[in-house]
Image (tube, rainbow, N blue to C red; front, side, top):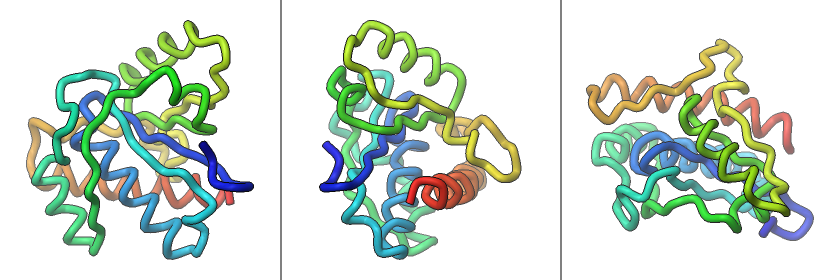
Length: 158
């Protein structure tokens, strides 16, 4: 799954329409700006099957556009193959982490390192809260957290 000689990362949240598509788009932009995007396979997914095929939340897209980032991602659910093909699976909260670890435990060839994206936050905000029921400000907070975490993750894995 990884690009030749490269790495792969899957960002995961509950529905794959708010937090994880923001993280994916932010990381893709950082990798592009750093000239390493061709060394990475970058994607995002959901632990649930609620929003399969849906575009990201309009508030998330507006937030990304404000930072000159575009995405054409469509929501998908995490599959068994993801655990065998991705190097890193980075999720947003404890509930995602539990769900992913539970799924991974039933997969023989799981090679993915499953972590909270927030574990890379220099400001030590471990959990990236779901902004779905919140305001535009909450989406901006998610963006800022993702930007801090993705920057550190990219620096550590380049």
